[in-house]
Image (cartoon, rainbow over all chains, first blue to last red):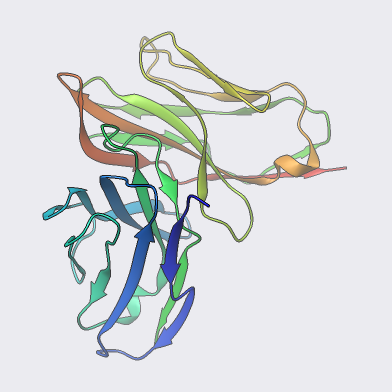
Length: 114
Length: 116
C-alpha cells in the first residue's frame, strides 16, 4: 500500500531530551516536507526537501533539524526540545516533478514536551 | 509574502444544506491553489486543485474556481452530508517560470460540522 508512515505516533518527553521523529514513504517521491499543526494557526512548514541531500527551511525551522540521506526517509530531529514545540507534526511527500503540489500526508505525530 | 486567508470557523450546517467556505490568497508569482481535508484523527488529504486562472477543481461534489481577479478560491458544495464533517484547509503553492518553489502555504483551517 502506498503510504507515508511516521513513528512514533504519540510521544511525551521532557525538556532538553533529544528526540527523532521518523518519516518514510514508499512511493519513490522526491519531495518531502515537515509541518506542525497548532490550534488557530493551521499548518506551518518546518523544513522541506526537493531531493536527496537537498533541504531548505520553511516558515518555522528554529529548534529543528532534518536530513535527507536517502529518498524514502526524512527524519525530524529535535536536539533540545522545549515546551513550545508541543504540537501535532505531519510529514508529507509529493510525486516526482510535482514539487509542493499534491502532497500525501502521514497520519501525524502528537508530541508533548514537559 | 505568499499567504492564504480563509473564513473563520466553526461552520455548523444541517444535512443537505449548501456550503461555502471562503478563501483568498496573496502571491507574488503564479500560484496553484488547493483544498485539503482533514478527517478526525487523520492526516490531510487533497480534495481538489486548480493550477491556473479560471480553472475549476472538483471532487466528491465539492467545487472551487480559481478567480484571479478577486484572488479567491472559495469551496462550495450543494448538499453536505454528515460524512463531510472535517477540517478544510485552503493552500497555495507558488510557481516561477513553470516550476514550483517548494513551498505550500496553508490557511488556518475551517472546522465543518454537519448534523443529521
